[in-house]
Each structure stands twice: as C-alpha cells, then as structure tokens.
Length: 183
Image (cartoon, rainbow, N blue to C red; front, side, top):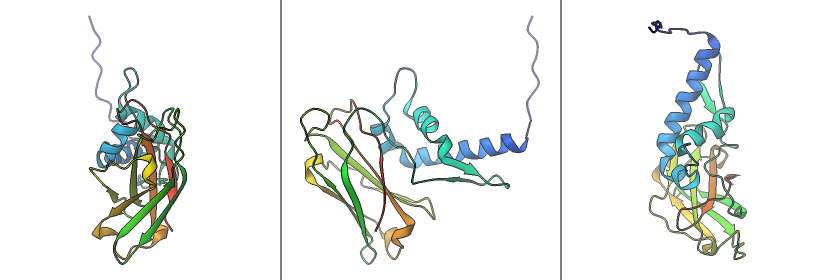
C-alpha cells in the first residue's frame, strides 16, 4: 500500500522568491533558446534548459513582492572548451538602431578555430528585450557582427548588454560567454 500525499500549497516567502526566479529564467530561456542551444549543449542527461537554469539561478534575485530580476552582466549562455572571444567591444548607433559587436580573430588552430561560428545577442537591461541575428554565420575571423532592430532606435547604450560566444561549426562545443556593456 502507498500513502496518499496531499497537495502542497506551501507559499512561504522563500518559496515565492524561488518560484519567481525560476519563472524569470524559464521565460528568458524561451527568448534565448536558439543561442543557448548552440552554447549549452546537453551533457549526459542534463538538457540545455537545465544547464541554463543551473548556471544562471544565482544571477537572479527577487524583491519582497516576488518580482524577479536578472543580472545581465553575469548571464551565461554558453560554456565549454572552445577559446573565449578576445577583445570584444560593442558600439550602438542609436539613430539606426544598430549595435556593432567587434572582436579580435584569435584563431590558433586548436582551441580557437577559424571555422568557429560567433553568436552575439543584445539585451536591453531595462526591458529584457533580446535582439539577435537568427541566421548569422559569422566566423571568428570575420571580426564583427552587426545587430539591427527598430527597438534599438533611441535607446541609451547604458541600457544594453551584449553576450557573445564562439561555437564549433559542427555544434560539438562552445566557449564561455563574454559579457560586454554597449558603448
């Protein structure tokens, strides 16, 4: 015989805080699912989603009302053994709504291949809006990516964060995430 377990309707402040943070990360994962799936490949039985939640739970917080927020300066979209992108910088042209992300070609033939693909996303820290090129095939040797969107017109650079990483063209591995404040 099994014991019947009643429903758990516990709602302590700590539980509300945790639920709010998980919900915020789940919503963010849905927004960032394409880049995250390229940057956080499943490991064993741990999915890209679970890796994203594990790596970013401590980059979130919730206030007394249970409203969760994310520290975008620490957000992790990728991880692996590929060499980090080098000298990453991002500049906003607010009139055109375009962010140019530049980086140094640090190909070395082993941990940084010239065939590595670079992925970059722009996040508006004030609104949580994400801008990313969906079909980019920008390589490590290209040196820059331009991300353009009407929602970037007139935005202050201080509100924007760029998260970038390199990943193998065959999808087998990725670098850690580089976080850069837009200038």
